Image 1 (cartoon, rainbow, N blue to C red):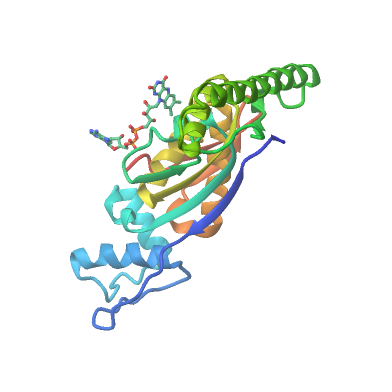
Image 2 (image 1 turned 90 degrees about the horizontal axis):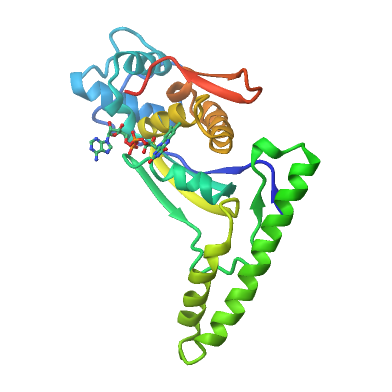
Length: 249
Ligand SMILES: Cc1cc2nc3c(=O)[nH]c(=O)nc-3n(C[C@H](O)[C@H](O)[C@H](O)COP(=O)(O)OP(=O)(O)OC[C@H]3O[C@@H](n4cnc5c(N)ncnc54)[C@H](O)[C@@H]3O)c2cc1C
Protein backbone atom coordinates (compact mmCIF):
# COMPACT_ATOMS: atom_id res chain seq x y z
CA UNK A 1 0.00 0.00 0.00
CA UNK A 2 1.19 3.49 -0.81
CA UNK A 3 0.12 6.32 1.45
CA UNK A 4 -0.46 9.74 -0.08
CA UNK A 5 -1.55 11.36 3.16
CA UNK A 6 -1.21 10.68 6.88
CA UNK A 7 -3.85 9.07 9.02
CA UNK A 8 -4.22 11.00 12.26
CA UNK A 9 -6.25 9.82 15.26
CA UNK A 10 -6.73 11.63 18.55
CA UNK A 11 -6.10 9.11 21.34
CA UNK A 12 -6.39 11.11 24.53
CA UNK A 13 -7.40 14.49 25.89
CA UNK A 14 -7.44 15.93 29.44
CA UNK A 15 -10.29 15.42 31.85
CA UNK A 16 -10.78 18.25 34.36
CA UNK A 17 -12.25 17.76 37.82
CA UNK A 18 -13.10 21.09 39.38
CA UNK A 19 -12.38 21.08 43.11
CA UNK A 20 -15.51 21.93 45.09
CA UNK A 21 -13.52 24.09 47.50
CA UNK A 22 -11.95 26.23 44.75
CA UNK A 23 -14.57 26.74 42.04
CA UNK A 24 -13.80 29.01 39.10
CA UNK A 25 -16.37 31.27 37.50
CA UNK A 26 -15.82 29.79 34.01
CA UNK A 27 -17.54 31.72 31.24
CA UNK A 28 -18.26 30.69 27.66
CA UNK A 29 -17.75 27.41 25.83
CA UNK A 30 -14.56 25.51 26.64
CA UNK A 31 -12.99 22.07 26.73
CA UNK A 32 -11.65 20.24 29.79
CA UNK A 33 -8.06 20.93 28.77
CA UNK A 34 -8.79 24.63 28.44
CA UNK A 35 -10.54 24.73 31.82
CA UNK A 36 -7.57 22.97 33.39
CA UNK A 37 -5.19 25.59 31.98
CA UNK A 38 -7.46 28.45 33.13
CA UNK A 39 -7.77 26.88 36.57
CA UNK A 40 -3.97 26.64 36.85
CA UNK A 41 -3.49 30.21 35.61
CA UNK A 42 -6.09 31.64 37.98
CA UNK A 43 -4.57 29.82 40.94
CA UNK A 44 -1.44 31.98 40.56
CA UNK A 45 -3.40 35.14 41.44
CA UNK A 46 -6.34 33.46 43.24
CA UNK A 47 -8.64 35.11 40.70
CA UNK A 48 -11.20 32.30 40.59
CA UNK A 49 -14.04 34.83 40.77
CA UNK A 50 -13.07 36.01 37.30
CA UNK A 51 -13.27 39.74 38.08
CA UNK A 52 -12.75 40.78 34.44
CA UNK A 53 -15.60 38.46 33.33
CA UNK A 54 -13.44 36.82 30.68
CA UNK A 55 -14.54 33.75 28.79
CA UNK A 56 -12.06 30.85 28.87
CA UNK A 57 -11.24 31.60 25.23
CA UNK A 58 -10.43 35.25 26.05
CA UNK A 59 -8.48 34.27 29.15
CA UNK A 60 -6.26 31.87 27.20
CA UNK A 61 -5.89 34.36 24.36
CA UNK A 62 -4.43 36.79 26.88
CA UNK A 63 -2.16 34.07 28.31
CA UNK A 64 -0.79 33.35 24.82
CA UNK A 65 -0.42 37.07 24.00
CA UNK A 66 1.53 37.69 27.20
CA UNK A 67 3.72 34.62 26.72
CA UNK A 68 2.73 32.77 29.88
CA UNK A 69 3.21 29.47 28.08
CA UNK A 70 3.77 27.40 31.20
CA UNK A 71 0.03 27.51 31.93
CA UNK A 72 -0.56 25.62 28.68
CA UNK A 73 1.69 22.78 29.82
CA UNK A 74 -1.01 21.29 32.03
CA UNK A 75 -3.11 20.06 29.11
CA UNK A 76 -1.70 17.06 27.22
CA UNK A 77 -3.03 15.44 24.05
CA UNK A 78 -2.05 12.10 22.51
CA UNK A 79 -2.21 11.47 18.79
CA UNK A 80 -1.62 8.35 16.72
CA UNK A 81 0.16 9.05 13.45
CA UNK A 82 0.03 6.42 10.71
CA UNK A 83 0.87 6.65 7.06
CA UNK A 84 3.94 8.74 7.85
CA UNK A 85 7.46 7.95 6.73
CA UNK A 86 10.50 7.13 8.79
CA UNK A 87 12.06 10.37 7.53
CA UNK A 88 9.11 12.32 8.95
CA UNK A 89 9.43 10.69 12.36
CA UNK A 90 13.19 11.19 12.31
CA UNK A 91 12.50 14.93 12.16
CA UNK A 92 9.54 14.81 14.54
CA UNK A 93 11.40 13.19 17.42
CA UNK A 94 13.85 16.08 17.52
CA UNK A 95 11.13 17.93 19.43
CA UNK A 96 12.01 16.94 22.97
CA UNK A 97 10.64 19.33 25.58
CA UNK A 98 7.18 18.19 26.67
CA UNK A 99 6.98 15.31 24.15
CA UNK A 100 6.68 11.53 24.57
CA UNK A 101 6.98 9.05 21.69
CA UNK A 102 6.38 5.35 21.09
CA UNK A 103 7.19 4.16 17.58
CA UNK A 104 6.86 0.88 15.70
CA UNK A 105 10.10 -1.08 16.04
CA UNK A 106 11.75 -2.22 12.82
CA UNK A 107 13.83 -4.66 14.88
CA UNK A 108 10.75 -6.54 16.08
CA UNK A 109 8.18 -6.00 13.35
CA UNK A 110 8.43 -7.83 10.04
CA UNK A 111 8.69 -5.21 7.30
CA UNK A 112 8.36 -7.66 4.39
CA UNK A 113 4.83 -6.31 3.86
CA UNK A 114 5.56 -2.76 5.01
CA UNK A 115 3.73 0.10 3.35
CA UNK A 116 5.38 3.18 1.91
CA UNK A 117 4.66 6.89 1.89
CA UNK A 118 4.83 8.64 -1.46
CA UNK A 119 6.85 11.86 -1.03
CA UNK A 120 4.35 14.71 -1.58
CA UNK A 121 6.59 16.40 -4.16
CA UNK A 122 6.26 13.49 -6.59
CA UNK A 123 2.52 12.80 -6.18
CA UNK A 124 0.69 13.36 -9.44
CA UNK A 125 3.68 12.87 -11.76
CA UNK A 126 3.17 9.38 -13.21
CA UNK A 127 6.77 8.93 -14.39
CA UNK A 128 8.30 10.02 -11.07
CA UNK A 129 5.84 7.90 -9.11
CA UNK A 130 6.57 4.82 -11.23
CA UNK A 131 10.33 5.25 -10.84
CA UNK A 132 9.99 5.76 -7.07
CA UNK A 133 7.71 2.71 -6.70
CA UNK A 134 10.14 0.55 -8.64
CA UNK A 135 12.97 1.53 -6.27
CA UNK A 136 11.04 0.95 -3.05
CA UNK A 137 9.64 -2.38 -4.23
CA UNK A 138 13.13 -3.56 -5.14
CA UNK A 139 14.38 -2.41 -1.72
CA UNK A 140 11.62 -4.42 -0.06
CA UNK A 141 12.53 -7.50 -2.07
CA UNK A 142 16.15 -7.08 -0.92
CA UNK A 143 14.93 -6.82 2.66
CA UNK A 144 13.01 -10.10 2.36
CA UNK A 145 16.03 -11.85 0.80
CA UNK A 146 18.36 -10.52 3.50
CA UNK A 147 16.08 -11.62 6.35
CA UNK A 148 15.92 -15.14 4.87
CA UNK A 149 19.70 -15.32 4.44
CA UNK A 150 20.39 -13.92 7.91
CA UNK A 151 17.96 -16.36 9.53
CA UNK A 152 19.95 -19.10 7.81
CA UNK A 153 23.31 -17.60 8.78
CA UNK A 154 22.31 -17.41 12.44
CA UNK A 155 20.44 -20.70 12.54
CA UNK A 156 22.63 -21.72 15.51
CA UNK A 157 20.91 -19.07 17.67
CA UNK A 158 18.42 -21.12 19.63
CA UNK A 159 16.04 -18.30 20.58
CA UNK A 160 14.02 -17.76 17.40
CA UNK A 161 12.72 -14.36 18.51
CA UNK A 162 16.27 -13.18 19.08
CA UNK A 163 17.34 -14.63 15.71
CA UNK A 164 14.52 -12.77 13.95
CA UNK A 165 15.49 -9.55 15.70
CA UNK A 166 19.13 -10.00 14.64
CA UNK A 167 18.01 -10.56 11.04
CA UNK A 168 15.46 -7.77 10.83
CA UNK A 169 17.65 -5.15 12.49
CA UNK A 170 20.37 -5.78 9.90
CA UNK A 171 18.06 -6.16 6.90
CA UNK A 172 16.17 -2.92 7.63
CA UNK A 173 19.29 -1.08 6.49
CA UNK A 174 18.12 -1.46 2.88
CA UNK A 175 14.62 -0.09 3.51
CA UNK A 176 14.08 3.46 2.28
CA UNK A 177 13.25 6.55 4.34
CA UNK A 178 9.81 6.37 2.74
CA UNK A 179 8.92 3.21 4.68
CA UNK A 180 5.64 3.79 6.51
CA UNK A 181 5.73 3.88 10.29
CA UNK A 182 3.33 4.41 13.17
CA UNK A 183 3.98 6.54 16.19
CA UNK A 184 2.07 7.62 19.28
CA UNK A 185 2.87 11.20 20.17
CA UNK A 186 1.90 12.80 23.44
CA UNK A 187 2.66 16.42 24.24
CA UNK A 188 1.30 19.28 26.22
CA UNK A 189 -0.39 22.17 24.44
CA UNK A 190 2.64 24.44 24.73
CA UNK A 191 4.95 21.83 23.21
CA UNK A 192 2.46 21.07 20.41
CA UNK A 193 2.27 24.80 19.62
CA UNK A 194 6.06 25.07 19.33
CA UNK A 195 6.38 21.98 17.15
CA UNK A 196 3.42 22.92 14.94
CA UNK A 197 4.76 26.43 14.46
CA UNK A 198 8.10 25.09 13.22
CA UNK A 199 6.81 22.18 11.17
CA UNK A 200 3.82 23.85 9.52
CA UNK A 201 5.91 26.76 8.29
CA UNK A 202 7.00 27.20 4.68
CA UNK A 203 10.59 26.23 5.55
CA UNK A 204 9.58 22.77 6.77
CA UNK A 205 9.91 19.63 4.64
CA UNK A 206 6.72 18.91 2.64
CA UNK A 207 5.59 15.71 4.32
CA UNK A 208 6.03 16.88 7.91
CA UNK A 209 4.49 20.22 6.93
CA UNK A 210 1.41 18.46 5.51
CA UNK A 211 1.18 16.36 8.66
CA UNK A 212 1.61 19.40 10.94
CA UNK A 213 -1.18 21.25 9.09
CA UNK A 214 -3.46 18.21 9.47
CA UNK A 215 -2.68 17.89 13.19
CA UNK A 216 -3.29 21.61 13.56
CA UNK A 217 -6.71 21.27 11.91
CA UNK A 218 -7.55 18.45 14.32
CA UNK A 219 -6.50 20.56 17.31
CA UNK A 220 -8.33 23.65 16.08
CA UNK A 221 -11.52 21.55 16.15
CA UNK A 222 -10.64 19.73 19.36
CA UNK A 223 -9.40 22.62 21.48
CA UNK A 224 -9.73 25.94 19.65
CA UNK A 225 -8.56 28.19 22.50
CA UNK A 226 -5.06 26.67 22.45
CA UNK A 227 -4.64 26.90 18.66
CA UNK A 228 -6.90 29.74 17.48
CA UNK A 229 -3.96 32.03 16.69
CA UNK A 230 -2.68 29.73 13.93
CA UNK A 231 -3.77 30.63 10.42
CA UNK A 232 -3.63 28.01 7.66
CA UNK A 233 -3.01 29.36 4.16
CA UNK A 234 -1.81 28.23 0.76
CA UNK A 235 1.79 29.29 0.21
CA UNK A 236 3.46 30.35 -3.04
CA UNK A 237 4.68 26.77 -3.51
CA UNK A 238 0.95 25.78 -3.71
CA UNK A 239 1.10 23.68 -0.55
CA UNK A 240 -0.61 24.52 2.71
CA UNK A 241 1.35 26.12 5.51
CA UNK A 242 0.44 27.85 8.75
CA UNK A 243 1.56 30.94 10.61
CA UNK A 244 1.11 31.86 14.22
CA UNK A 245 0.24 35.17 15.90
CA UNK A 246 1.85 34.52 19.28
CA UNK A 247 5.27 33.16 18.50
CA UNK A 248 6.86 30.32 20.55
CA UNK A 249 6.10 31.10 24.21
C1 LIG B 1 12.84 23.74 8.90
C2 LIG B 1 13.73 22.95 9.82
C3 LIG B 1 14.94 22.48 9.38
C4 LIG B 1 15.78 21.74 10.23
N1 LIG B 1 16.98 21.26 9.76
C5 LIG B 1 17.79 20.56 10.57
C6 LIG B 1 19.05 20.04 10.11
O1 LIG B 1 19.43 20.23 8.97
N2 LIG B 1 19.82 19.33 10.96
C7 LIG B 1 19.44 19.12 12.28
O2 LIG B 1 20.16 18.48 13.03
N3 LIG B 1 18.26 19.57 12.73
C8 LIG B 1 17.43 20.29 11.92
N4 LIG B 1 16.23 20.75 12.40
C9 LIG B 1 15.83 20.41 13.77
C10 LIG B 1 16.08 21.58 14.74
O3 LIG B 1 17.46 21.86 14.85
C11 LIG B 1 15.53 21.21 16.13
O4 LIG B 1 16.20 20.06 16.60
C12 LIG B 1 14.06 20.93 16.11
O5 LIG B 1 13.37 21.92 15.40
C13 LIG B 1 13.53 20.88 17.54
O6 LIG B 1 13.59 22.18 18.06
P1 LIG B 1 13.88 22.45 19.57
O7 LIG B 1 15.19 21.89 20.00
O8 LIG B 1 13.64 23.92 19.76
O9 LIG B 1 12.66 21.62 20.22
P2 LIG B 1 12.49 21.01 21.66
O10 LIG B 1 13.50 19.98 21.93
O11 LIG B 1 11.08 20.58 21.74
O12 LIG B 1 12.74 22.22 22.61
C14 LIG B 1 11.83 23.29 22.73
C15 LIG B 1 12.54 24.42 23.44
O13 LIG B 1 12.89 24.00 24.76
C16 LIG B 1 14.18 24.53 25.10
N5 LIG B 1 15.12 23.40 25.27
C17 LIG B 1 14.91 22.10 24.95
N6 LIG B 1 15.96 21.36 25.27
C18 LIG B 1 16.88 22.18 25.77
C19 LIG B 1 18.19 21.99 26.25
N7 LIG B 1 18.77 20.78 26.28
N8 LIG B 1 18.88 23.07 26.69
C20 LIG B 1 18.31 24.29 26.68
N9 LIG B 1 17.07 24.56 26.21
C21 LIG B 1 16.35 23.51 25.77
C22 LIG B 1 14.61 25.45 23.96
O14 LIG B 1 14.11 26.74 24.20
C23 LIG B 1 13.85 24.84 22.78
O15 LIG B 1 13.64 25.74 21.71
C24 LIG B 1 15.38 21.49 11.57
C25 LIG B 1 14.17 21.98 12.03
C26 LIG B 1 13.32 22.70 11.18
C27 LIG B 1 11.99 23.21 11.71
